[in-house]
Length: 205
Image 1: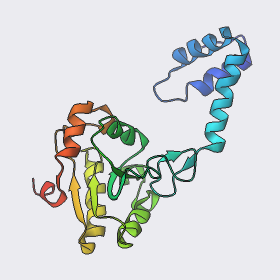
Image 2: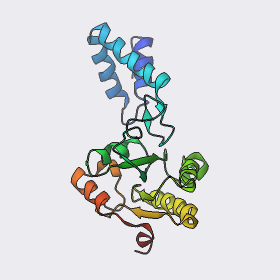
Image 3: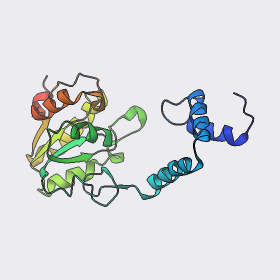
Image 4: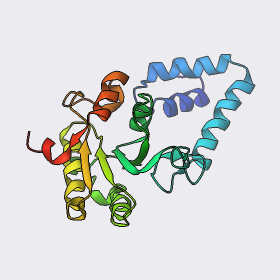
């Protein structure tokens, strides 16, 4: 792809690094932004800059937040003794959209995947274990995607918590095996949360 401007080429190169964005789509987006008022492009640039410099991880659940504790963790109507373990913020948003869950979350930041070089130490598993050992949690709900990596992560955490005697459950398999949680419809996902089953039962199926 030949460019008449180095600035245009640089912008397209940066835009095309986004997931699912090829060079042609990146070019369309960049040209679209050039047609917009300068103030609108500046607002986008400012929003992205603030996102990188001011975003935080909630100190309690590791969800993305604007403050030290996210809105869910500071909400007094939420049950902090029930913790739903998820991979990332997209899963939190998916479950919240069901309006079926009133507990807290713990965001791992990924799944154990030796093939990708991701081990337990690279995820926020240790703080979850410490939270349970401190006696602050009554039930852990495993809500990772039903993939090999998700099941491996669930089982690893379960083994770490087994000696604590804490209640562990997993979302019901209304979610198809191999499906990502964020793509499940809200009714199915809501029923999966409501009809969760003991985790040890899920490992025997």
